[in-house]
Image (cartoon, rainbow, N blue to C red; front, top):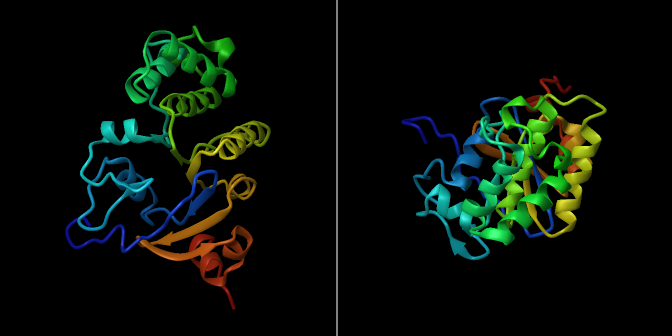
Length: 229
């Protein structure tokens, strides 16, 4: 809560490895705040955040990253004056704790997986939006996360750019990474996630099978602004 404003109101969820959970809701619903609580950028007034049985609640952002939480940001934040490869290497060294050849190998792997190998020596600040989004994902993957938080990673991409991103995210889920994904590009979510969770004013409205959540009159009224008669 911020003063009298409750932004995460008894939000309870769990996510097994190898599953993807989509988070939807209108602007101001508390979606990014939920991510900030999980990643450690904010501390909850009450409640706990656990990863594979380990209580992460008192831990710093850096410690949570090392424990297995990777995150992308809605607006990409690359190290603009470093190369694409160096950006990925930062994740491998300071997130996954890898060194020397192991770190170099991991950085190369995630650039290959995200389609950035041919841009490894370019300055990150020179990349167009699609490649910046890919680099956000690559840096998060370089930390070797058990849980990957994706914050509107498809936002701003064109219709022909989105399928490749969907394929990459789907493959990560199949590899056993747990994925928590905030996204307004609903068709991208529907192509990947196993469940949807709808938030409004910091509270869970509904959670369940994606088609059932999107068909809910309450969710349609809140999220899509549709008057349901």
